[in-house]
Length: 81
Image (cartoon, rainbow, N blue to C red; front, top):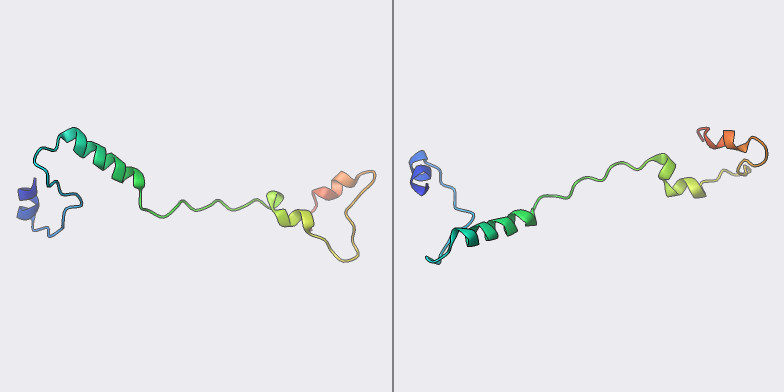
């Protein structure tokens, strides 16, 4: 396989080099599995937080305006602020 890369003109260095001649294919597979599991990429981006779940929504207040209360107060809970 290294001859094929050389013939193609690729100058890449191998990512893994086996230096022990008695290494079994199972051992190589185990090492490759460990390195693959490590990843190395950036973490997945976090999804945007819903405004309904925002902690700022709980403490948000407007000067002179108290939270709605009493009969029909649930209607005001769904209105944009």
